[in-house]
Length: 345
Figure 1: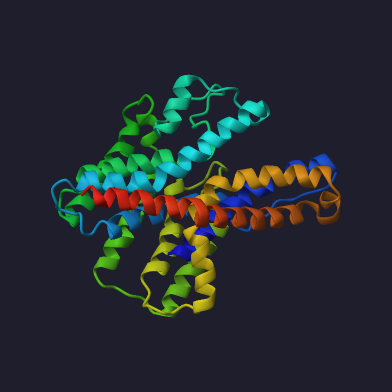
Figure 2 (figure 1 turned 90 degrees about the vertical axis):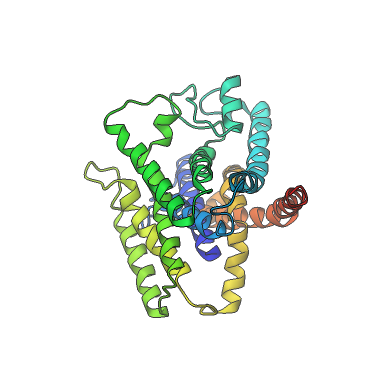
């Protein structure tokens, strides 16, 4: 699972690095054609399916117990909030010095408060995003956690069914109701990717395990379907939760339905380390990308290495930054807060 987390985060890094590589190439007078091998931003869809799986799998002791919702939400807050709040605050601090990083202008007080509270709110440019735009995914995540927490007092199967029906009905209601924010945001069909992940978790709970060959076939099929980009915005696209969420569910199934010790230990250790740092990688990679873009534009590196050298450098630099932040900040802080949470039980 951590390997898949690492790959999903790196896909998002490649997506954003290619965008900035285009800007860098134009600035230096180079030609640049981005890679369409995969819809790189579909790494987010993989994350959403993983999240649905993890919530069911990790909450096994909590289902059907009184007060479980409180423990569940406390754990999710401890895991998600500190780093995101820190990165959002850092982004605002940078914006004070370099206002040009704020593409939509300085946010209102409500936009700032809504960003910290994971409430979808409209920005000055008309988009519904938090001030640190990558937080759009966390707005969906936190909503899913709230829905999940509301059902966790039920037995596991009933809870999963309740969450599935609740999200499905909310999405279906878009056909009949024009919801205001934030419901209009939360009712996006992309929330059904959490349902796909929960479905994979329930399949795993049956005891089903796949052979190595079957898992390889799932991985090949999943990436092949992503390569076809069936949810591309060309007017004939499948809904995102099908075109990207479906292949993502196949990849997650391949990751979790295997038997122990099937992967080479050395490769696994390296990728698991990156998977552990995947949240930091997702949140922090824009800082590495923008800093490197200026370095490449203002030094001979841009000419020597070109746009693709820049993309590769972004992947390496963002990964190293994430590993350092995870090792020295995110993990110790999470361990401390988790210990405090446990001591209060």
